Image (cartoon, rainbow, N blue to C red; front, side, top):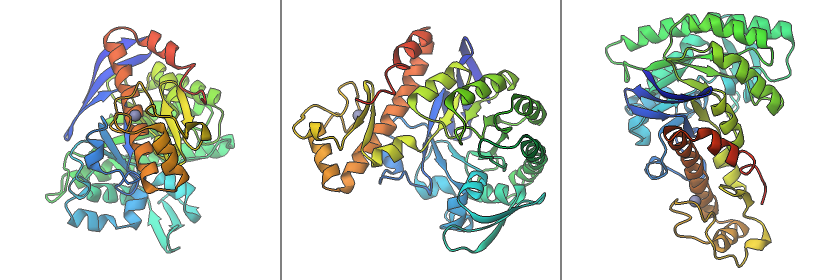
Length: 376
Ligand SMILES: [Zn+2]
């Protein structure tokens, strides 16, 4: 259940109650693709990094180790040792972006595994069964994620199919939750808004899916080829159509600036591989902007990665040391940088919430939007 605590223009401060604990919103979800954050970071680390929600990927876990295996091991919470809320995606995004030779029909999608090429069928029911086996807190509806730009007629047809798929998802989820041996009988379901960059399709589809009275709603199909301005325009068009008493999740977005801009437009929940992925390439997000730790100017720099950061890395290590680890190809370089970046993202959202609680969100956003994207 989502509780709206305060509103700041279109921006929202709220709390989402789940069977695995409360999520203070706006919030950032930390992406643990195959049950681990890439960069050798575990659930034990996440507890120290202000992480509230872990996100795991249905497609990857279905291929390896197999959702039946995770189920036998008690579900994702027991398997990964993360006790808080977990969101699983539907597998749709990976099926459409990673898998080869896919064939879409009304029933679902047949595709070849990117691991060994074997043929797999996934439709709404399969996605719900896999997510039920994983036992996540929040399951995402199975949808088609279309890359931008896309042809209007195709997007319209695809959106209509995604709505039909959503009805099937809901029915299957209700059936699975009622089974006596379900790992999480209170598993929640979020629907996904699609419609590419066409406002009329986005709004029409949102109005259709909000009729289903789901636990939350996501905006999908953004940050997949369109410009940042187009993305903001679509968010602005869709959020007024989203139920006020449900969380709003913008999928796969984005940079710290993207997140602040989307919060301003009424989004509550985010996920992105960027903090971990960029960290593995030596890019650190800081309160002064983005630092490239490969840069030779850090060779003798004894200051912390970010002097304004309280994370375990900034409290202990110097820029010189982290620079050396990257130059030497040490695994620790990635781990330390990922820890810092996740802490930074989780702290960014914490500061957003605090600024709302003290009535200073606009000032906070105006202060940091011009700074956080700078390369320094
Ligand atoms: Zn730090």
